[in-house]
Image 1: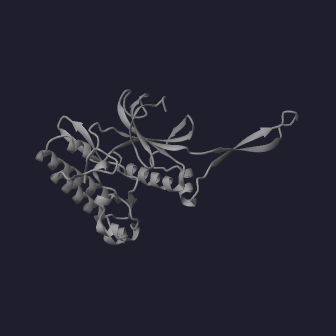
Image 2: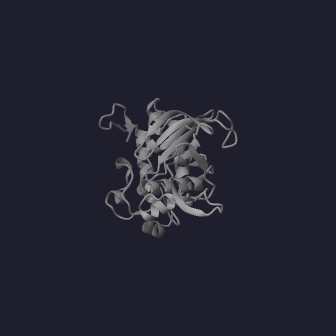
Image 3: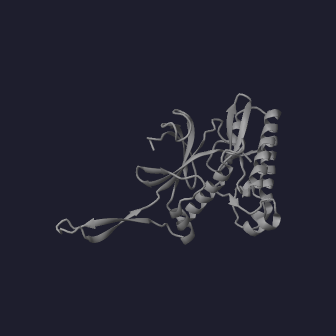
Length: 281
């Protein structure tokens, strides 16, 4: 990793992975030497987590850098050894991980090494040694947002009507963009909105596609209803039909977005158990 990117500090840790702040070490992998990036490490230790990682990777590749209010994916690296990384080709998913998700168990890709008997004049194949090669982790290299998440940004400054309007306008545009491309996010909340600070003002970025789902047409209720049934998301922002365990459409994202807008405009906050810092919600 140090040959390509330098990890500087941990930014956050969740149920499935950890995000670091990093810098570009080698010009050409993405950007110029010294550019700041966010690097997310996703350990591939179970088929359930691998399935979520593949969903996240595929959603981010579709959106790529096509909307200013959706987090940009710059690079994806496959870790196959303690210090072995290889970039993934654009438009392809790692077949080992796809097989693991489909079979319900972590699959090793075996590479065969021929072992020959040096005592024989003829170089005859004596045996085949199986050398397992496992994907240890996926590394997603993304744009870095120095403003933190939406909760931190909103609650660290006094009420600002102009800022509130920017949040509503930008996030509404981002969700419409995702739905046009068949992506239902399923976990819209302030923690999953990052803020980039620019000379012209804050730029909101929808992030964390770990629970996202691809559907044929996110704005088509029939198609979406067939695809979406899992109860997932965050309690305060979850749509009623998701809470009830019924099938639902992309409109569940719009409900979550409406609750988020309400929390921003009214500065509604809560304290999580064991925490001493307020959160929007």
